[in-house]
Image (cartoon, rainbow, N blue to C red):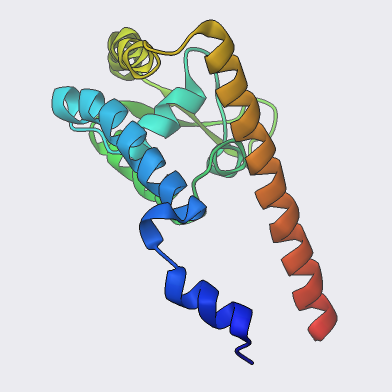
Length: 166
């Protein structure tokens, strides 16, 4: 039901000032600035780079563990793994402790790419925050964490409500 207050909200609604939209635009701009480094230099997608970053220097993880540690879904991780294997940046091995499980790790070529990209993305990170004071950067990160926790709580509440409806 549309009330007088709802009608006014609907008339005054501007996407450009809507917080979730602004966060999306912010995230896209930051991600694009960072991803341009590894995309242009090595032709890596965001999912491929995230997979490589999670594996890092010493990690040997299953694809499910990569999903758990990232903001990616199974499909994106699976595609990234396949592509990285084709590029010979990643290999699949049998887990030494559980022969039924396969683990993924970077190849020597993958480690060389990873090591080359790290200082480049760190430079972009520094450029993104160069006009912030140390205190402002601390506050920004703190606020981002608070908003993320609020969003996660809302998702939990919505999931609980959906479960009660069945």
